[in-house]
Length: 215
Image 1: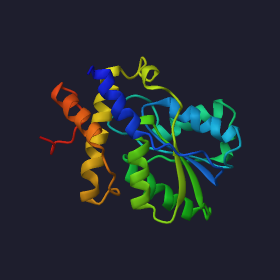
Image 2: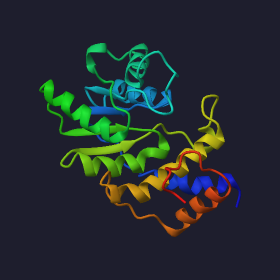
Image 3: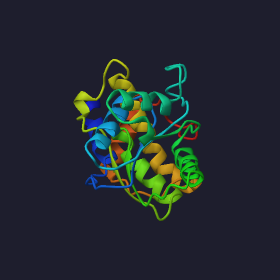
Image 4: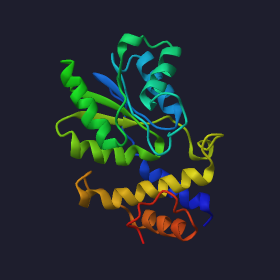
């Protein structure tokens, strides 16, 4: 199989296939991909929720990329698209998904905002890990996970190459395997075909985003 054929197996696995439902808030997790911000803003403008939450400080992929935090940069995109500033909540200190959850939860509590249901907006290849992390770290929260509806073949762009996309997906799959034992997320079944694709891509050198404990 080609690298792309193997990567598509992992790409498909990372999608959880949730159906959009109206919610109390749209929770956009920050990253290097501004299409996530655009999609979150579109969901707000389309009436899926009355609140848009942007969460993210500066991560490993965004260090030096912008003059502001991920959340602030994403918020500026949403405002340019027509989202009212006073309908955007900004959490700009988190550096990983667990902190996205903890810091945003604390911010909502500080502001006395009652949120019972969320639409989580993430990169396409991070849907499953986002789902597993939220179930573990925000028990009782009702949510669906979604991402910009971009097919794999169209996802790489000037900011992120095909090789980077594959390497990040491989790294995320490794974390889906390992993070439950560390208490970060719930366990997810990984089909044999998906893990075989992972092992082959690792053999082919897509190791740039693996955690150091991986052989």
